[in-house]
Length: 453
View (cartoon, rainbow, N blue to C red):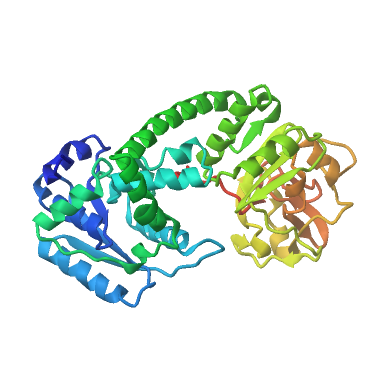
């Protein structure tokens, strides 16, 4: 007989999670989150401050009444209620994925440091997730389904009901006389998860009793294997990663077996906050980028992520904005921070002792911002003659894609400074003078770790 659910069973589960001073419950008003809300409300003396987040996706004509019902339930239990309305942007993905993205973005804005989001995913959800990943050809991390806890936003995300079936949660709800919302879209079997839930899993259950529990157990075994693969990748990363974390040594990477290369690339991309490619694009990195000549310019792009190579370094970055199509300089108006057109980042004016352009030039001359067109040259302090910008970029190992996007500073039409790198000696300040430097921040930043479950 299936073991019954009681609120007290949550206490040891919550105690093994990282400490939090506030719980945010993701509350849809459906059966699962209604049970979790009621159970947590019975444990108020044993848990941190409890608040509820309800997301109105605006996808149903009933969404306003559902929100009102959720608010009434929270009021009855004396639990703080927050409603967030979101707009769904599909961006080429299905409605389920788009709604999930919008929902979790809303959650992420609410969860602060030292706080934890609680969701009501249960054992049946775990089994469905494993089957979905199998049908999509998921890798080990995807087959591990949903972890009980992971970092999320500024805090964490936990799923305390993963060990309980929907059957026992419904029995609890009925015994307590709870009311919940049945969203009609949850019964639309044209949606893949609903097909698994209402059509496929019942058939499997008829053939093999307890199949949901078995699938959830398998997901746990796979999660353990995924953890071991991450430990191996972390060790490999120490020998392959370069200083900034967004580059790998290709020669060091190629020493590893192909399987370890794939494993490390997936881990590295997640660690740097980028999306992990599908199998086809991952193989393209191995086949097209790693063996390419050092002077080649291979590129593999997916989603909003790019992999490029320069010399022996493998780079990951957000999709680059187009390089400027014009050489016409843009006048600088004296602002401390200048946002560059076309998504090319920003310039920040800084002052340094004995370095950079002479300060009086900013008042007496016309300063403009432009980009490389070819043939530019600089005279540098301590070096004879003129030096082509092309040669300087090569000496400094500036990647080719950066050269056309890095801003140049012109004084009265003459190249005076390459932002963040060099100043022409004709315009530089003396050792005892305060100089002006322009630092460039491209719109390509290191991201936080990407937790995709």
